[in-house]
Figure (cartoon, one colour):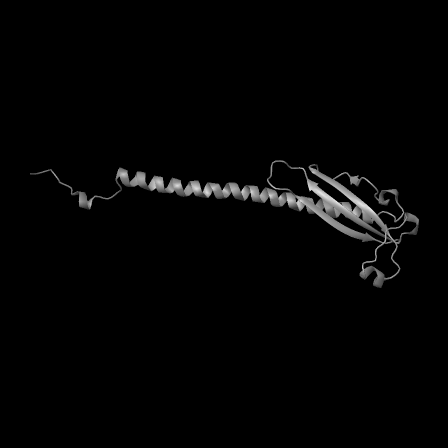
Length: 153
């Protein structure tokens, strides 16, 4: 026959509809798994950012207290309720306690003989600060506690 050409299925190029559908199913399953990883990465990154801000708040507040004179009223020994400081960034609470000590020598200090005394007799203050995140969106409890010593002068 002239003008008619027959093609064989063995020589045809391209994909069948079934092959394309199977490839799309496999691709969607892989994409679904990767989407879960992106979600987890976003939460982890946000939590890490919150921890970094938490440490920055603690450092800033502690440096603020260390810059105060030894006899400042904000460094008065805590008796019942801890003192509070306003945070730089919203979403955090900062509380701290002060204990006054009279240490005569480093040998006495290293032996653990720390006796609390009246503020007039103190030559050492221990500042214990707790910074907590109030971010309710992120999972887990983020609290940072740090202690520092302050001497007169």
